[in-house]
Amino acid sequence: MVDLSGRVAIVTGGASGIGRSAAQQLARAGAAVAVADINGEGAEEVARGIQAAGGDALAVTTDVAQPPQIESMVERVVSHFGALHILCNNAADLSLLERDRDLLQTDIETWNKTWEADLRSVMVASKHALPHMLAAGGGAIVNVSSVDGASGDNTRFAYATAKAGINVLTQCMAVAYGKSGIRCNAILPGLVLSPAATDTLEAHPAIREIFLENVLTPHLGTPEEIASVIVFLASDAASYVNGQLIRVDGGLLSHVPHLAQHEKYFATLATSAEAPGDGATSA
Ligand SMILES: NC(=O)c1ccc[n+]([C@@H]2O[C@H](COP(=O)([O-])OP(=O)(O)OC[C@H]3O[C@@H](n4cnc5c(N)ncnc54)[C@H](O)[C@@H]3O)[C@@H](O)[C@H]2O)c1
Image (cartoon, rainbow, N blue to C red; front, side, top):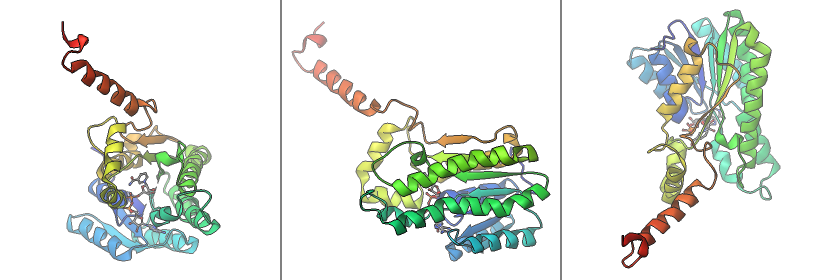
């Protein structure tokens, strides 16, 4: 059982999905948690839920695309809780994905805003959190990246490159501060059934089937399944884990790319082999 008693954590994007579940699980493990989100009401609701369950939480309305707001977030948390040990850089502005479909159509503003909210925010939050972690004698940064930052697709160019940037930034921070007791790791989720993803799946039910065909689990991932890995990486249970990019994707990127097509092809052969009069079934 992970024990985070006495630790203080910030979770950005903590009002919904993966961040919400991470805030709740960190609090259940004993950490005092700052729920930071551009959606202040949502952050308040999550913080109230944690308090109602007996945990310690603070909501901090923060737009991570605005560096001064990130600086204020860190200062507010440290002045409220007295220290900072864990930073989970989870927020991303997924509303920009609509405008990030095709490279030829992607405008410079979309590219810049995506990088500001999804990548620069990770650098800025870490820059302001690290001095407090170093003062506390150590800490853990857990960045929420994506499998999109580790493989090519024909869409989401700005998002995918921002996530790829997080991956290298994670490793650079592990190199620079590991000897000082700071561990920095990234999680690369595959499709996760957070509100952002379930909206898409409701609009395009076929996408659910495509992903189910391509993960190596009987189900699609949930925010809780990502959050449990965030808690592990934030805790002393992961004391020898540093600079790692950990895919939590149900095995999505672990198989040959033509797996689903192969299975369909061999299923077709099996069906035709069972057809009446087929030599293969008439032994
Ligand atoms: N759900 C997936 O399938 C999936 C897959 C791979 C990676 N991810 C990553 O997981 C993370 C969380 O996504 P989710 O699926 O839980 O989405 P979500 O929409 O449920 O939660 C995202 C949260 O971030 C907040 N947010 C958005 N812009 C912000 C800003 N500028 N400042 C502060 N907060 C902001 C939103 O208000 C929301 O509460 C993101 O980094 C996303 O890229 C998600």
